[in-house]
Length: 236
Ligand SMILES: C[S@@+](CC[C@H](N)C(=O)[O-])C[C@H]1O[C@@H](n2cnc3c(N)ncnc32)[C@H](O)[C@@H]1O
Image 1: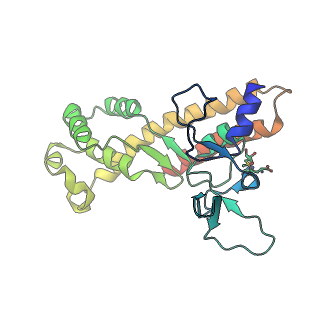
Image 2: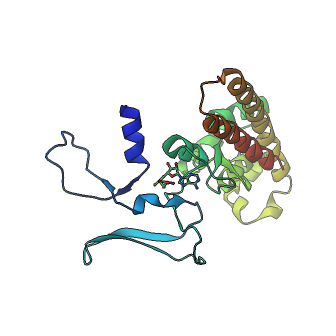
């Protein structure tokens, strides 16, 4: 019952900073509001909208800069949410969601470095940490993220290249063989992730029971396939 109530509110509310209610015994700010009609709007990751409370009109207003024909469904955007988040928070997912990513873990990058006996590893890691580059390490629908590829490029540099490492952003000529080497590292990691992905799919197929909501089962399968597609794209 609590779970049902939580999802009813969470899937239909908007962010609205109000005064602390005397009935709430928490220090957390009270930022959820329900608004009739507003909660009828569905989500699209590409919807361009502005939303907020207008103190002049005393109304919560939403405007869209997208073009619609009469009787078309008008969408809002619930946020830059991946399908995983949409599924967990709202119970649906959207095909071709540009916010889907597969995170590449730092530990897995280290494992790949050990596998390929990468030289000067501690120096390279210190350099990457110092420049705050060990973040946004992920694959997207477009392949390896720019940050991930840059990190892998630094990791495969030889000692001479490392002295001018920051030219990696501007001067491809200085590092002719670095992209294939970085991709080799990436492929090794991706191969592990694809194997895990196949295991996930097998596990889901095994634990599905007749009592499960068929829509949710379809989405669970979809999420694993989406991850697989991103990993396959990143292989190129
Ligand atoms: C704020 S309500 C939107 C209105 C809801 N469709 C209704 O009929 O009351 C949020 C819920 O709508 C559904 N929803 C929103 N956008 C969707 C989409 N693009 N595809 C499928 N379901 C969606 C999900 O069930 C979500 O939890």
